[in-house]
Length: 151
Image (cartoon, rainbow, N blue to C red; front, top):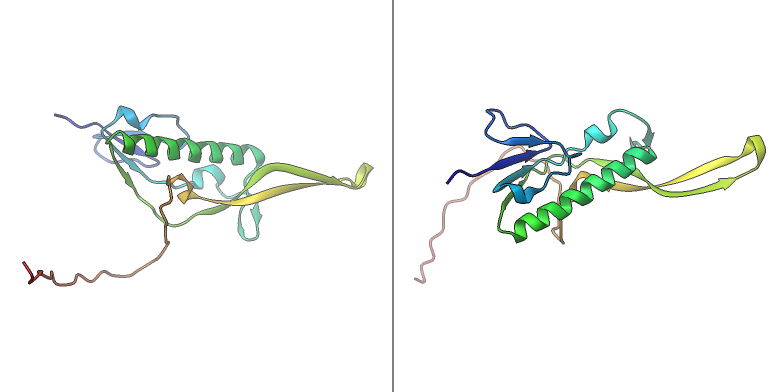
C-alpha cells in the first residue's frame, strides 16, 4: 500500500511528497504522513522591528495567527485520526503581532495612534500542552545500552 506524504513549509527533494506552504489551507487528513517545518520568516521578511524582534503589520499579523491556528487544528485532527505527523522544530522564531487594539491620543495634527502588539512564536502551531524547550548543542553522546538484570 502506497503512503501519501505532504511536506508543509519546505520542499522534500525527489517529488515523492506533495509540497505546500504554511499559508495554504490544506487538510492533513488527505495524507498518511505529514512533515511540518514551522518556519515563519515568509510572513515577515526584513521589515519593521520592535524591541529587536520583527513586528508584523496588521495584515501580516492576521495572516500569521490564522495560519498557526489552522495548522494547530490540522495537526490535532490528523493525530486523532491515526495519521503520522513529524514536526521539524527548527530555531525558535519570535515576532510581535498586532492584537487589533488601538488607542488614540492628542488632537488634530498631534494625534497619535498607539497599536498594541503581543509576542508570537513559530512553535505556536504545536497543539496541546506540549512543553518545548529550545536548546542548541554541538554533539550527541550515545550511552551504552543497559539491560535489566531483574528479568
